[in-house]
Length: 135
Image 1 (tube, rainbow, N blue to C red):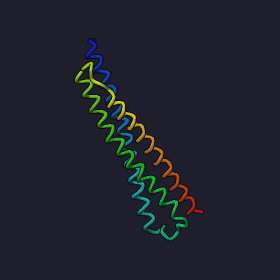
Image 2: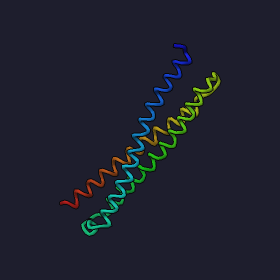
Image 3: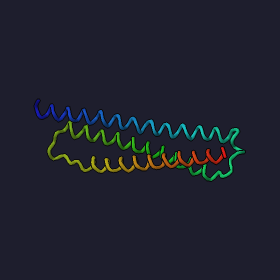
Image 4: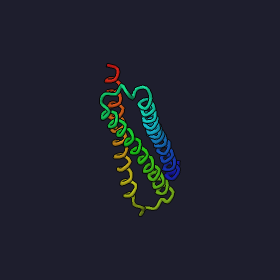
């Protein structure tokens, strides 16, 4: 296998792995949005009078929305990352700098962590709120 073919095959493997990772975060953002919609529907319905502490619910929903927005930002940055990676592979220019790709990769990681943190804490707060209703 020639070096160019080998490099192209490695690039294909990375693209496939990143597409699976992107799909996971897309699904997580959709789950966050669905959870927000479900909770709002339940709160505006029969459980509205059973809520004792509404602040916990508001914070949980806010964190879920922030998580969803962070994950959408992450996916937007990941698409830009893919474009730069494809460009660098296609150009095969030894003078091409990978600095923008590395910088975007860092922001993808930050948005990933923020989205996961917001989503996790938001869901936990909503579970605590449900637990408080059932007591």
